[in-house]
Image (cartoon, rainbow, N blue to C red; front, side, top):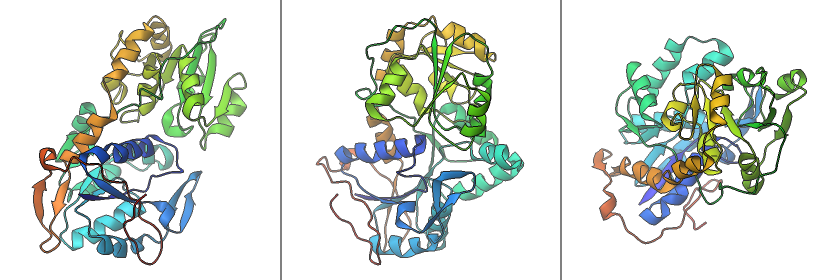
Length: 365
């Protein structure tokens, strides 16, 4: 089966959406699903204002010819950006079925940056996802929250973690507790709730973003490590005593699972995302007082955090994704129904990437 994935978030961007999509694409291979990805790198792009590391397509209408030429068996739109909007328009006009996913609290992000009322943001989400045969969301609490805003056909697919890459490592002795944050440095991440705490601990920030310079100028006692990857990132996780997740707007937070896989407990607010990942007293602590959550997280058995992470692999996430794809009949573009994994071929199929150029094509990658 050939899947066409349309996304405005893809490498070289570094965020949870990109990680999720890349992992799912890889894990679809044993299910016999080839994947082509239409992403911003195939188009002319411009950086998002105040967020230069994120680039968006400025000629997204080219997607029409790409989809028409490829005629995949199934299509999934992963984001609501220019490419997602262009793909939606093309498919809806032709009565072609597709599934979608919702990765972030889009209305809250927009409101934090522009003060646009949440009601407008949720009206846009309802409009965008209404034609979808299934909209995949991160957690049960996120699903309930979206349902309260009138969204339908929501399916929870979860998130996973690579427990080979992220694993306990040798830890360095320290005089003070070491508190870690990993992720974007942006207004919607609520980092000041962590940085302003007077807790007598070392604070380390891994990542980058538009708010970094202003925050670094005000918090000179914090280690600003920038982006870290692979083994180096795992070392940062493993050598933290507590992973602090101050966001109130994330739908999940993959970084929490990565920290747990390295044996590090999480301290967070009791909001959507953390309440679905953190079992209070087992792999972290949730509290309306973030400082109190950190103090309680320091007492958590690190082995319990690792055991929790081992139960959350990407294979399960990919299978849920595949179960909610719908097959397209290009002779009569209507829904034939969801895929049945038991009848998918079991042989490995190579991941394919949609090449740029005047004539898109499938090729072995």
